[in-house]
Length: 401
Image (tube, rainbow, N blue to C red; front, side):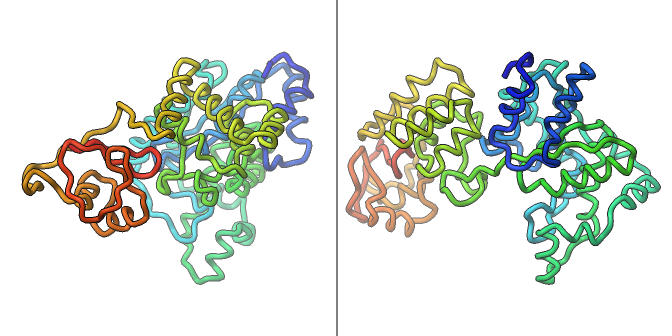
């Protein structure tokens, strides 16, 4: 995006992939005002460091931040080391356990480093803050004032609270403080725009009301869609193992990109890359396999540059044709596990970490899901001599020695 582009061009680029913009026309007004006053907009994103790793689902909103930077504005990345102790109730059907400040700070250490793969680190375009700076020393009188800006009735309008209340699931009072604390972040840094996933819309709107109560112009709330994971159903999550991490090796990233469900490929391209969407839509319609490769190459290029693309694609093709790659992780099997120099195939699969039990290994073999040296294992009683290369699925290899 060109910071010197027309207002219309900037609006078009900034709206790409946006789910909600509140109020309608608010983005255009903020951009026009900034241009008139010859100043940068302050664009806020708050992240609670409950997990240290960033995947491309979370990167969707970071890419939107980068778009604002490219348009000439300053983004404020708030590490919610204090709010993470409260726990965001968004989308939760029960109270989240509270974390310690030390835990949240440890988890947050890698956020900025990973985010720098996407954001421009220029201090004129990026400001990094921790909300413990202002929430930690906040006195009780000020907390009461903050709480007075919002009603219980309005707080209970949010879907997750309503559902929990109807189901008789407890709601702790401290959970009401979370959206207020997030809103106070907007007051402190004087946010013009706040970004978040669609599950954050309520919190972003609370920020608008609280800013008004503190005599500030309300921020524009802009949300981006939640990206489904590789399973095509659940939201992308490391805990569900349906994610593509932005720090994963190029060959892993390429492989996972090729696993994106056909029905979600356009959405992945729209939210995770800068590919031309009209060209991508046309290619998906004509040749979805070629479209997958285009997306996979672009995703690797985005996070690793051009150099590793060819190698990642060649490795994918080699494995797809039944080849065994050189970079296979090794597992050492203790000699005590061997009998007459061999080991039962099911036990080997479990010791190698491909299955959690011998029973699961047996079922895997019965479903023709395990290979030994490139050949499908059909005998659940097979005895194996080492070294041996086991393969689960299309591209999970272990060399047992």
